[in-house]
Image 1 (spheres, rainbow, N blue to C red):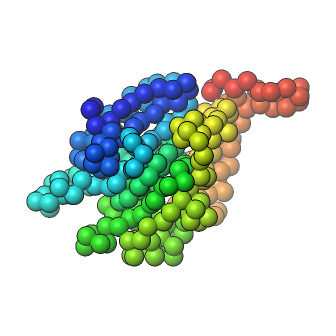
Image 2: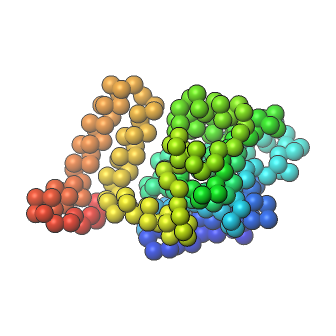
Image 3: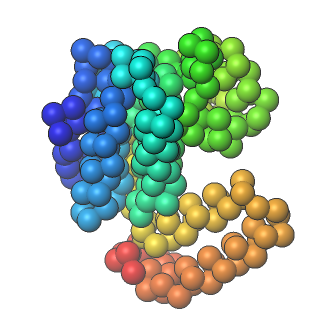
Length: 256
């Protein structure tokens, strides 16, 4: 996977898009490499997976336009569907994912970031879905995830204008959780440790419950929350957490 690097750093898996000369543009092979890397992460003991881009110019500048030209409609639909499926895995991935946005995150790069559990940004980060300028629309989930993150009206304005969102605006509208200072991966790991210190079963159930909020009615969401809360209550981590609270000591979670 020459265009992608998979490394471990302490309790984290790090996936680095490694096409700096092409501003880490998403080639079809790179999307396949991301899928393969997720397979590897899923069988590891990592507590979160961080995505970033090689170099300091771009997280991912979007699709590799050279590959798009000349595609048949059949191949276009096939590659789009594969990209959607790959990014959709992050919705139900067993551990949280964090996009560490260093520089440009346009088009497919913004869609990859949007699929992650969290997004954090360098001060120079710039984001957008500029497909409209090519006579296209986002195809890897951008039209579906961006409204869920920042609301329909804001998402429509960004998609239909194709404009760029800087880091400060992204933080203000909730597109990114925070703007990082200093060494980005270290800062992103510190951000991740605010939640990876807790048990993975509860983290996974919490993510599933919140995702239901955008997909169901309030009544259905409350029923799902009750079911998921009951599942959490049955875990060994829940027993440990309540006992630790009563004993006035830190809980020691074992992810069971």
